Length: 402
Ligand code: NAD
Image (spheres, rainbow, N blue to C red):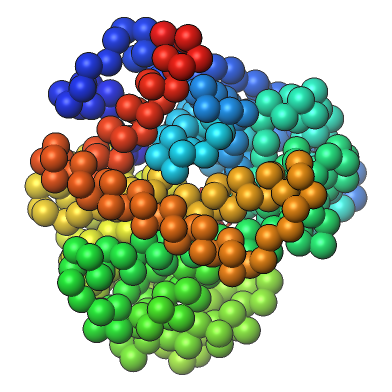
């Protein structure tokens, strides 16, 4: 998975041994088992992890992932990405993440509620003290956050809640908004092109994929290929995203059988002859096996960690730029910050204001990364990591950790 090693960043700046240790070691790791009985009297055991990576900037912030392939190692990496994301966007949060490994994610509402009540039960003190502030991630949604809120009754203890109970208008769409805005800026500033002249493929039609395609269409883009875990669809003329939303109204519906399209596999989608590829599903989908076959001109990382380390090297050699996850999908945590702030102050923010704040931060970070990339003669990911690491080291000095 592609996270730039500190060894590489050390080629550009001095990093003391102490700073390196504070950036490499996790501040805290909690492992427990969420056990529950289903309606059919079956006992299910879910290995669960909560990791705080570096919390120099503030409380650990990051989503709860619930999927069959969750591991402690993956949760650690995702917590580290959150540290970098919060530092890059200059938010007052540290890096955190939760992972719940569930063999069969197709569970009924009763079981879901049991899981999240049990999850809170196991780490209540951490949550009440706001040492870790969860949000939705792959496999979880605002209703799960509502259960967490219902157990704690402190609005600032969890973000990504439904709007009627203190959630933020626009939080649901926020990650997709930042992915779409990152794409638009890249197209205009680097490719010197217009979105409507280009072909885009998006992997994943969950929270991130849906809203990325929604905003890109609003920005004038043509999305020709989309997929979910069941398969993909292709239409050279571009999709009407609203129709796709109507075709897949719930989490359990799939776009794979959408009639006005050719059927494609996820493998075909990734290797398709398009201008822009936006992986928005899960990690490690661009690997050393397929990186040599990609035909896109740029990859915009909507998902966390979709490109492996080996693939990142191959793409670098092939001259295919990758705009990194911790810039592109930072809209979720930017919106979470506004929701957390409102939870504390009682303030309310309009949706358009939220999107405006996301666009402003993405634009500012993008130009900073572009400038740094040119100065260091590096990749976008290396430049973004350099900026985040520098910010974290300065903050560690301010807190007298160093
Ligand atoms: P989600 O569960 O809502 O949707 C995931 C989508 O990907 C679904 O369409 C699913 O069918 C598809 N998918 C899953 N595995 C796949 C596979 N192997 N091949 C093809 N498609 C597959 O999840 P999400 O919230 O949209 O998160 C997607 C990614 O974005 C994750 O990497 C997550 O960590 C990252 N992310 C999410 C948020 C957020 O606010 N939701 C914020 C930042 C980053």
